[in-house]
Length: 489
Image 1: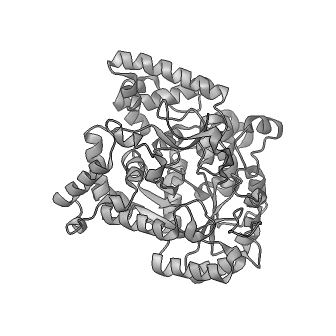
Image 2: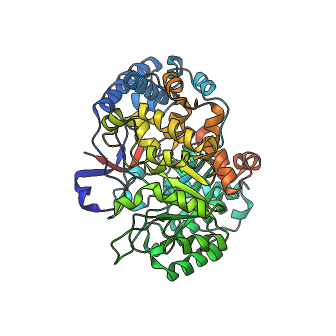
Image 3: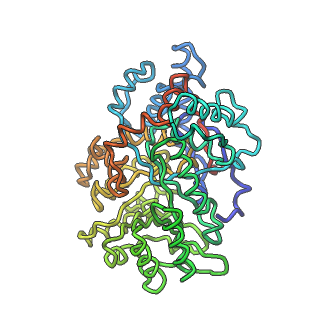
């Protein structure tokens, strides 16, 4: 990302409550200042949490770490944006009521996660915070996993987590959220080997997490840069054969060093050799950054090129990251004038004109996080439009965490998010039922990636991460309410 603007923004802040009240950037777009409505949400949350914490005899900070704090955040959003979240007053005070409202656990497969290295916390503020799961604490958990036999594979392991450098990722994604499986991704670099997290490291993180867990907790992206031609085709072969990557990640608006143009997925000279190679290597899941105009040639991030590519490669699955949405900045005004979500609405029309296409999937990372916290009514239209165009079996859960802190707030916000009845009646949108949400949360991705959900549901609670997560929650969880991406101010 171009860093010229970074002096005007802050990276890594603590949120007042469990749900951010300002827009957070995943480093692929410039964040905008807190809106007037978001300020009102924060004021409502401070007032409600203050009153509730006094009634319960605890500090506001303690209260905001409980299920009551999450309920208070959802109620604060309802007070400003309208009743879009299913939450009751009693949930502020009764954890049993909150749990009952949540319902049975859901299987969550996050197809877009990101690691943030220790360099993002140079002062080690998080490590010094009371209750933080520090490096030493995680090493202790790992020793307990060996000593108690939670994972026999660790019996001969005398390594440390220091060489893995994803301690906080484990805490935020697997301890502080309900995420079952995650797909690790990365922003691009001048060359694939120089990406923020190069393919070799993504595969290493995946393998180490799975080794520690004793089960499949992580999958990993490989990277493709088709402008590099034959060199990239060879690099793809290495990633598939040696790293055993699970899907490809590509950025059509990004340029390798020395070039000044992007590329299109339907370019038969540049992209099709890459797609043929993906088919040959039998890694036929292509995840492409679309929307959130990234790079020096932002127009190449429009998703319009995927229709022809999907027609020409019907055995390749195309995962449209960010659902092709151009930007959520000032979207209220634009939506009020046109009724369109920039780029996404247009892409939905293109898909509806080609109803036979069944190999395009809409991923909601960053798009949902932006819209639900700043323009939740537009968020309802967003889901209505993509579900209508692509159907309920082709929408995938992604959070772009840990840029947004633990994904748990996004999980809870989506679980409680409701499609307003007037929109269902006027636009014939799908209701966001529990069955629909279960498919989006993980069942769709599990089918796409060949994951046996029944087996995973039986295995994960018993693996090392599941057992350690249970111990962590029994001893009293300490969510950080930390945001790792950029914010304005």
